[in-house]
Image (cartoon, rainbow, N blue to C red):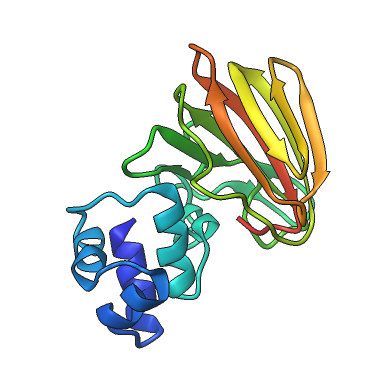
Length: 188
């Protein structure tokens, strides 16, 4: 992950200090993340990739390859993304992992497999962006806050909402959370 941030920073011709200022962290911290020494929180990771003109979702797509370096079986209308061959990202310093279930982030929607240990969450502040989202809990429980609505989703429960509303989630209960998340347009 640090290597990707570094290559994007250099491609944008940004210094460590410029990225640090944009992300609201220290220059030494950016350097440590790039070298794989420090593990940013999910919210700090989002700030870092946005500072280099990218997104967290772009970390799921490196050179068009997925997971083990294999390309998904894709044509214009059908994409088969086999288990174990999808692009997977485990966020440093957290117990959250995502796999990209859609072939890439250039389609009309993105579909993500989410795994999170109890207590893991989407970051310290609510998120807002354009589009719509739908999430389905496979196992575990997800505490979700969207706008003025608070709820706990269990297995087979789903939520659908406009992404412009402030939203955040947390894996609650004793069991790890597994969910599928669909976002349109891709914004991850």
